[in-house]
Image 1 (tube, rainbow, N blue to C red):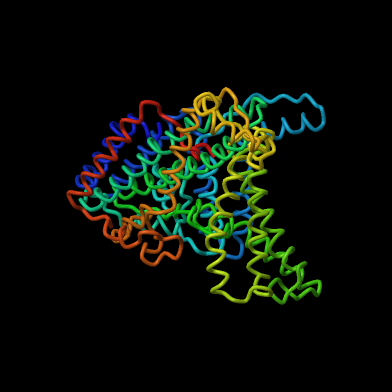
Image 2: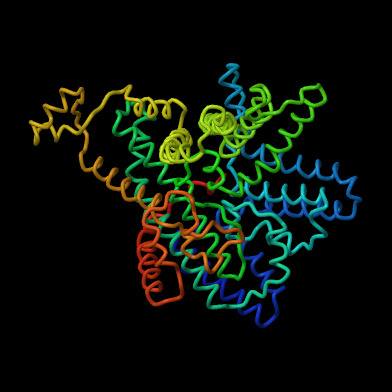
Length: 545
């Protein structure tokens, strides 16, 4: 069962909300909390009852480790934390990477090892990382004694269970302690608006574009050379599909939590408006970036800094530092972190390419910020020139990396990227040649060829891309529209103060959300469009990572 399904919208969600509100009023918030835990486990079991014991067992094991750590002096918790993390990572590695590892060994060594296909448990990456954050924070004394019902809801709360956001105990445990789980009009209005907008993004925008993008990727997988116009359409199209798919999921997750009087952290903040890849990752899957920075990048970088100091290399990175220091302290941990990020996203070489490309992008961006002041000192001039240039470079770089993310094989991704570079030439549907011979002759003189390709498919592809690109770049995002009602724990800057691309700012500020008849009609229209588009349920692109 997914958020974008009739079963969820018309059965599961109304039943969960009604049961929660009635129990909270009749028996108190503790009963409502147990109801939410049971509902979340049913939500998970609807995907596969087979893996429900794995989820429950993981929760009980980590809760036991957390209780033992809370009873152990702070300086002696490290071994318990290491045990808990080792078991968590071991389970994740077994279910997610065993088949990939065996297939790779067979390919490299010519071996014939066989392991039956292991089905990846739903959301295992997310609930594993979430429990690791709690164990690490407990080890440092940042979390206190846990109650089983709080711990259980922290892990299985259905709005964030399958695809995040990855939350911290400090963000959720205090909310569970004070939550009343009562019906409140403001919470329902804000939550329903978020859910409705997210459903529209997913079911109408992302899925509508997907139908036009997928055939090009399928052609690439079958070894067909993808020419320039189609390659760019596939690359940019999937970048926008991923954008609206994940943005839609993030809005829906926030909306579901808010209906229950709870808030999740912001996980998506208009990354395509960013003019640097560093800023892009600060706005794309924000809680994953936060996790990787705090628990992977920072420990590696600090270890390298201490190692350099111990060996007498005290000059660090910076405008007056050495390139070697920048490589060691910034580039090396960045590449390692993004390699692990790619591996986390999926067990396949395409995901590793995705991660390593972003590692290269981030390293180059960090180097630019460090050494640019040496030769370009005028900040105003740099801002004026590089903001629009950086916007385009960041979008293209992210889109190229996402091409490998979506491609079934590295060869398929290479085919599309080569087509974007013009290495496969330029082709147009031959209907242009027959209906517009004068134009076709001029185009042919430029090296453009005409092939039996469907013109309506090409027009539909770019007919989706152009308006969706405008939607991603121009208006404020959902959280900025709802800024006055703070639907998330962390919020973006209000649109008036957002320094990124801001066309038509004054116009959009007039449309800030409020509980009004106009917004009710708009939400109802978006809801109707989203529900009517649910004739074929499609998975969220992040749902099984």
